[in-house]
Image 1 (cartoon, rainbow, N blue to C red):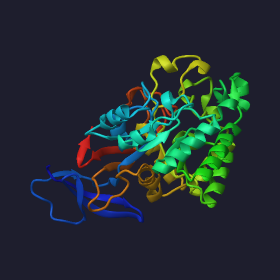
Image 2 (image 1 turned 90 degrees about the vertical axis):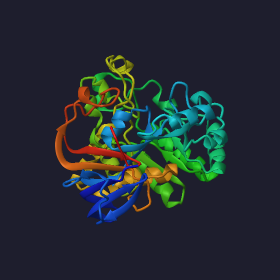
Image 3 (image 1 turned 135 degrees about the vertical axis):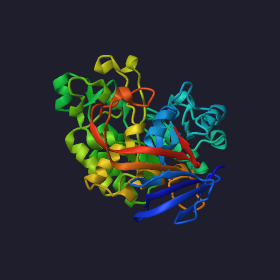
Image 4 (image 1 turned 120 degrees about the horizontal axis):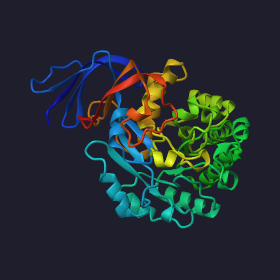
Amino acid sequence: MTPLAILNGKVIGRDGLRDADILVQDRLIAEIGRFYTPVDAEIIEAKGLLIAPGIVDIGTFGIDIPAFAAGGITRAGLMPDQSPPLDNAALVQRAGQAGKPHVWISPIAAATRGLDGLELAELGLMKAAGATAVATGRHWIADSGVMHRLLAYASSLDLLVISHAEDDGLTGQAVATNGETATRLGLASAPAIAEAMAVARDIALAEETGARLHFRKLSTGAAFDLVRAAKKRGVRISCGTSPAYLLLSDIAIGSFRTFARLSPPLRDEADRQATIAALKDGTIDVLCSGHDPQGPEAKRLPFADASPGMAGAETLLTLSLGLVRDGVIDLPRLFTLLSRKPAELLAVSGGELAVGSEADLVLFDPDRPWRIVGDDMAASAGNTPFDGLPVQGKVLHTIKGGQPVG
């Protein structure tokens, strides 16, 4: 492979920023600092740009290479909610090959056959086929016996379990969170406590079995309180959220804006502030995009009939940079949330800029202004609740294994 030299940028490390060049050879980082540039090297001039580990995005619902490249994502943890669900070894193996060479796909296996929440899938075979975690999918497993068996089996395999935290018995057909907005719009709604009830049950079972448990997206103060307390007891749990729950409250659904219909639904302002506090104090381990693009046929419907989900891959970094500018977190912590911790949870390469590590990089201009326009997005669909928002911070180069993507 032709060597790649990235010159005059600022590298984001665990301790902050430093001026450095990066030399990539044979897919690996060969040098960081100052070095003699090989005469045959391809050169990227990075003056004014920040260089960070490529983003590892846990829990995308589609393989969307253009969106991943536009957002600086070099590895995507693919949820099992595919057609058909990733509930056997052959499907897991095929999904793991789907993004190469542009973006590595880390398949997340279905916890139960057909994701029906009733019968465990063959976790051992799927792990051997390349599954990096196992997930309950878009829904919670209501049967506590099934969830207990899942966590015990996964613990014996040291396989991460990813849970969707909403008690279906409470949420039912709800499309919004109980409160003033849902009442004013006449929408079927459920209490926010449905999230904490699911979290409480799953934490108790994880504590009993010793399993590793990750809540993919949490959004309420009550749930974060449970996670904080469990971490103090030494339970092996982690949790994530996405920028939507940090930046938007339920008033964003406005006059039935289906682009703001998400799962879990947007919460009230008190829970949004609690989510920011959880990010600030370290309760939240991961920031994810929740990338779930839905076409016009799924969104141009009455609010109650529209499919939940948003295109989030290419806006994950730029929206998260706003949290840095607001002083909620700093840049090193941001890339722990976006890259280092997700890679650690999935037990995959990534998350570090170090000599000898795989050259998965994102180069971005933290100050470049632009406007999010759904119709112009690289994603397979542009349904975003941030449509029209002016933002700052733009990905200019996504590099996977030393090769530019996109």
